[in-house]
Length: 157
Image 1: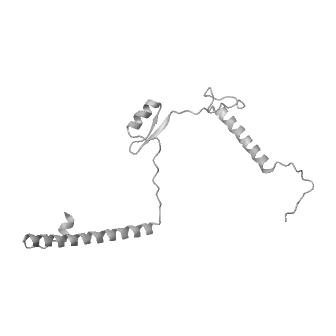
Image 2: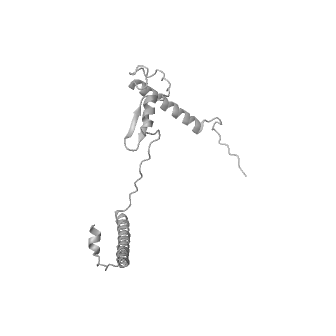
Image 3: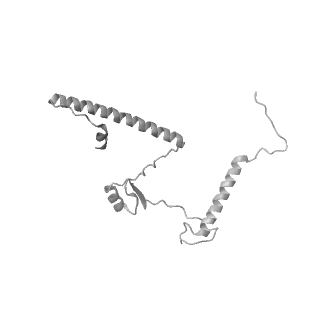
């Protein structure tokens, strides 16, 4: 059950949040336009004008455009001809994503690196052992007497 609550002395036609937001946005637009006018940004003359002059509407422009290359970086093209040439040279319209670097605790990173190195050393030892066995087998099949293999020399070659 919902109860109707009325507060005496309060008018029913309050604007509330919506009216406040509209006033807030209007104020900031007016102040922003005045600051842009006195700074000369985006004006027809390129210089400062009276703060109460109306702002010129923005006209979207297709050029200049930026194109992207994995090795050469960014390039700004001024017209369709330059854009076609850049695209032929391997540039593209979409930027390349920036690599994400996740920093961890140095102790954790060090442990992960040590574990990886231990695993790689184990693989190298297995491969050296297999190489020695295969070399001995090959020499036995060829009829030669196998010479002992110095593992330290193999690692330096």
